Length: 430
Image (cartoon, rainbow, N blue to C red; front, top):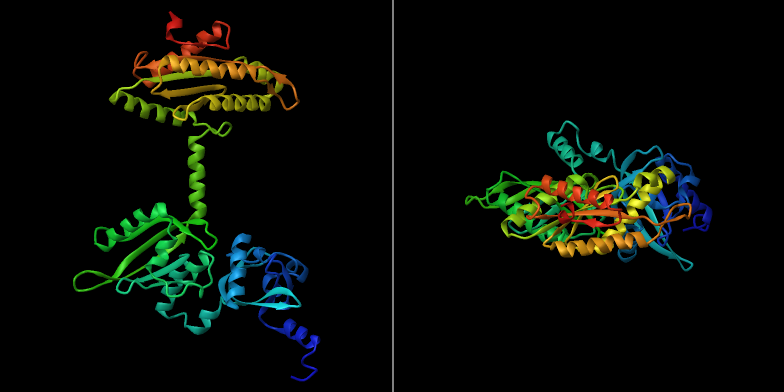
């Protein structure tokens, strides 16, 4: 190479003139140290919007610094690394890219240089759009987060690049995958059920294989997937030879479903079971006690003079007082007891397998600790609050949920009429 071509200016011009996007990245911080004109153009960004920003903000499929750390380590160990993913433009759109990364050191500092090529039009150039096989492949590919093809004869497994991308791997990282490659990634708690569903289809007992389970990604976290497949080839004895399928990442919808389920079962303020769930659990324990049989103590608790507290200090302070009472009850009750927010400042406590004497003793301790532990408002004012409680017993005081709750409620209001800050049982009503 001549001296003129080995100058800094020549390589700077080569870097700037490349039609492929080029990034120089700090592996330790994930910051983009330099980006050429093509990189900025494909992202619809100016240079200062790219440089000194994390590469994580540009890549839609590398989520979190831990995944970046693992990828940068793989680049360092392998020398060259290929990753197929999606880059995000400034306007929020994304496009598929193939990224070739190399690791190098210069003057004692480590760097990663990545060349990213937009591959959205690659297949259109390579294959005629009128080709039916191409169209089918494209639709299947885009309709899933990963395709798989299992050869049941030698146990080999083809996994599409989308499958690897979904789990944070480069398409060349996992060599010669087998069915065990997939099994090892399935959450241990889900594996038995998933294999059972697959086996049921292989044996012809189900028209297709379908399962929802957790799959471990590169950084060791689990994502939720919806997996479907079907035997497409069998031998003369009807034994499966080839099974194909596709998998979808349903993590977001699964987490949303869990959140909605939690919201439907728990009280937002106290995180206790709500009234609806309380009824369901009450019915369950009542059925158990009818068959064994065992006692259940039903306790209604209510904060005294709560309306006065709300009117004087406001609803926010009232909410905090309810949380304070909740914490007091949770510190005294047993793990086997069921505590529900019944409504407003009223609570239902179920004590399966407890005697009336033990339940009354526990409630007296709750009331004592609540009245003796000052509640401090947001304004720093210390208040001494109290609560009242009523107890009913199954089967002594009734056999239905409605009757037992009404009996406990009546006993609670008897306690209020006797001066509050106390517990009453059915014996105190006579």
